[in-house]
Amino acid sequence: MALFGRRVRLPAGLRALLAPDERVLAVAEDGPAAVAATQFGLWLPVAEGPVADGAAPAGWRRIGWDQVVKATWGEEGLQVIEGELDAGGVVTDRPARTLRLAEPRNLPAVVRTRVEASIARWEQVRVPGGTARIVARRRAGTDGLIWTARLDTGTPDSEAARAALLDYLDRLTRSASEQPFLS
Image (cartoon, rainbow, N blue to C red; front, side, top):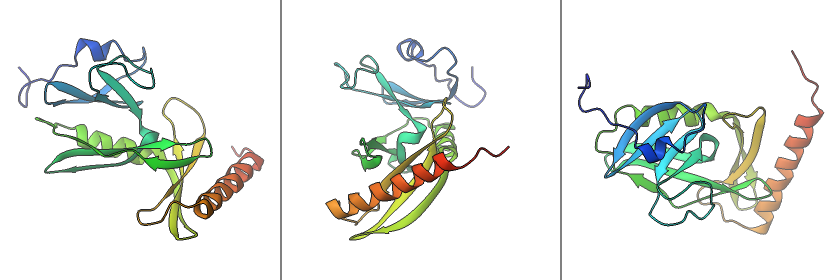
């Protein structure tokens, strides 16, 4: 018996997908499936059938913390918006996914902490038609930062806006590579 209610067990199928050094930080039930947070990302249930990216068999797939654009907790459940990164470093939002967690336990808090910890720096910049965010994120299990750009809500996705974002990213990555290592 668990100290604070029923213990949620990690399904064997999900446990088999974890990397050898991957630790489970929180687990909650999403209907008949489970949602798990590890130091590398958030494991979400997927529909039966083949997974499009081939990264994991049907059942679950992991979203890295650096790929979570936004996660909110409310009456509806845990809403997660995953970002899709193009070759230039511009992020577009995938459709929001709401997880109706029967017993959320500490999963929402772990998600918030991990997403916030993945952000090393961010800056809002002006682009034609509105604003965007340039973000330096840490990818769990790797060294260095990943620079991305994302148009703010309400800013139209135009060639001019994307060109400005690519220019910002190019200047940032070029200046970061020219910086001497400071100890």
